[in-house]
Length: 77
Image (cartoon, rainbow, N blue to C red):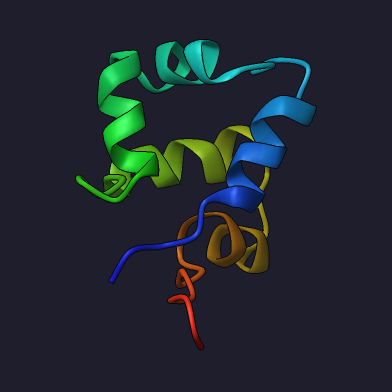
């Protein structure tokens, strides 16, 4: 199942350290195309990437769930 990363994207654009997806990819140490694949559900975010965000931005468990584990609703549901 794909996840809905809209809350994560909102966080990226509202955070003065990250600002955009290109800087977010650099922050994670991955290419922009690798990030795009993660955001469209082709590849998952790694535990290391999620923990980096959790620690560096003091994310709560609820924020981690919202940013990385919100299921994408299928059309018609």
